Image (cartoon, rainbow, N blue to C red; front, side, top):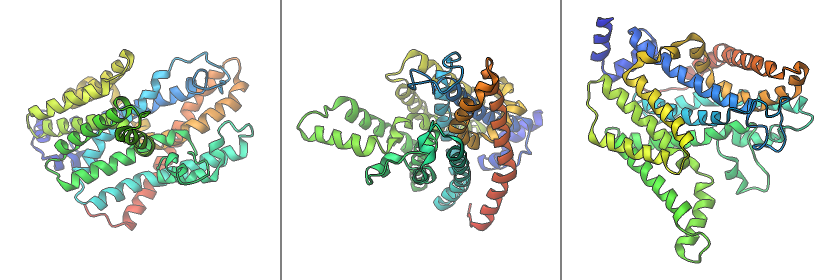
Length: 394
């Protein structure tokens, strides 16, 4: 074990990542990969608990779509699983950028990763709900036009500004993919313009965008007649409501900083004062105008990442095989779980009365199994085939 640790410390960052990807280095490195997949598993499970017990019941919905009503409405916090995904994404995308030489190669990899699954998941949701959702629990899942924003990842609000059609998503969960795409675009542009100063430039620009958004949305009065008031109205209409990355940018930035800490630690580089200062500023941004309960959730996420970087042995539970497998298939699971899952709970749950919750727990298992099966039998072969077809220069 000591020799393995010495090997891990002596590896360059690229060698380290290659070793991680091939899964052949020491148990320490394997441990970290498992932890990251464990994080994904926790994120998707909390989101699923939110959607299966809290999202579709009053006060968040006019009527309860669950056969058990609000009886198990204890999972409102599960919404913040999406926030955890954003932090993880910040880490992983910097990880990917740092080991991809060309801008085009980065985007080819991202599209191969994202597009096949969104097409498959949205088609599955559309077909099942068109055939069986006679009560129109999810009207958006019945409209073929909603494939446009779903497959392009672009918010329906963008298309609605230029069309009389009422666009939406096939599944409302897809909303979080649009901030992700915006983050990919912003981070990749900044990275390939100046790789050495990426973190500084990205964090500074993020902070500038966050401050600008705050001024236009909270300081400048949009009801006035001045130039700034008109600018505030246009900003909200065309920027804030459509290009909504800024609302989540601090969390992506935290993920970027966590990767920097991870990289520096494995290369024996000390943390600079500017990194500490940037981290403190971003922490303040994520905590600003937020309740104490939410701050506690954010702190838990940050502490998990710090343990992942500096004390991975404390997170042994995240190496659990079940959690790792859930993390591996978390993307497809995220895409199919909400509308399909709630529809099935609404229609089939009553047959398990008075313990309808048993069906919901069984549904967790079914959806996880289905997502894992898809990932292994369809997604991975398709990804390999597409990578052979598309020339990717690393």
